[in-house]
Structure formats: C-alpha cells, structure tokens
Length: 264
Image (cartoon, rainbow, N blue to C red; front, side, top):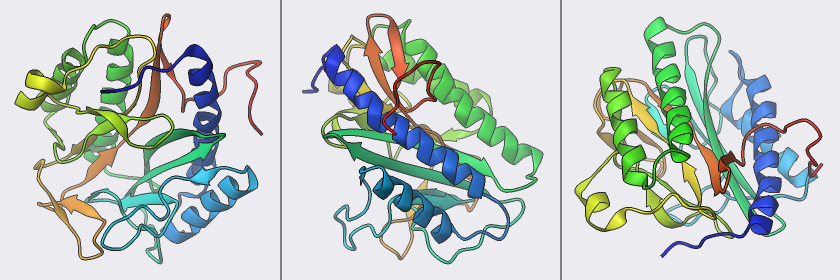
C-alpha cells in the first residue's frame, strides 16, 4: 500500500527535485560529440557532492553494484546504461537518468538528448516520448485513477507507430527511491485486477515512459545492468517526479518558478 504525503512533506520533496533538475541542466550542456558518458557522470557526481545530496543510483545492489550516479543509455540502450569511456557521436541519442536524496527525501528524473544533428524519425521518437510524459502529467489532474492515464499513454505511443516498453515501469517515491505503487505506462491485466490506484492529493510518483522505435522487447547486456532493444532500434526515456496536490499535479523535478526558494 502506498503512502500519501502531507503538503509539508511534498514541499520538502521539492528540494531534491530542484537539485535533480539542476543536475540535468549541467548534464545537458555537456552532451556533444566527443564527450564520454563517464565525463557527464563525473560532473553530475561532483554537483551532488557540492550540494550535500546523496546520489541514489551509486551502489544499488545487483550482481555487480551499480557503479555510477547516472544511468546513461545510448541509441538502442533503453535504460540502466553504465557511464564510462564511450564517446558520443553526431547523430546519437543519449538518455540520462539520475536522482538524489536531500534532507531525507528523494527526487528522480530522466531526459533523452540528441547529440548534434539527428535523423528526423529519431527526433520524432524523442518528441513522442517527451510528449507522452507531458500528456500523462496533464491527465493526472483530470482523471481519477492511474489506469485511465496509462490507457491514454499507450494509445498515444501506438498511434505514433512506436512501442511502449513493458519490462520496466515507474514507481512511487518518497523517503526511498522505489516505493509503492508500481506505475506502468500501459494498461495490463495486473493493473486492472489489483494494481490500480487513485490520483489523490498526497500521491507522489515517478512517471517514466520508455518508448522504442521498433519492438517493445528488451535484452540485458553482459555488464549485468544495461538493457537494450532486441531489434537494435533506438529507444528514448523521459521521467519526472510528480506530486498530486489539491490544485493538481506538481512536477517536483521541473524548473524553478519565479521567487521560488531553492536549496543552493
């Protein structure tokens, strides 16, 4: 059963959300041909350390503990890519996913960037994936249950000729990065039977559609972490941490608004 957060707790969660937003702005400036994924990761880690924020990803348990503060996935890599010596090239796309804990609360967000000039169809993939996240945020203030949002998300992606990754879903977030409920970007029998939840004030979730140009099927790579498309076609990933309030959804990992108090 998921926890509903108080207005005071949600306000506290805005602090890590803003730090994650700022980390993404830093990373975005580094995305260009010739830069390594490891250089981007190092810059984000330095930023979190300077702001007394705890990276959420580094050390996450697995067959090999995750070694970085960002997941950086390139081209056909869907999620959980390990940053390192890989050099970005013109025409690539690169998904950067990161999160931090600040004052005991978590924020988590992902953005897929073009590297220089990319093909038109690849840009359309990015536009559809960011668009379906924007659609979900808008619907969260107009629908009563998550299944209604997830249904429209799936339709939006399929109508664009792309596929929704079903192997990975979003999640509740609060004191820990991964909390209940699970937040799929599509409607499944499990969601209809027992996984649905109300879009009520106090709910805080990370919504993260992953959209593939071809098949929805993914495969694990030998590093024990990186997941890639089975057909080798491109994948995009966008994510925000979002709180439901009496006034509607609040994107906690969105940019600061005028006169907003910031934690740096």
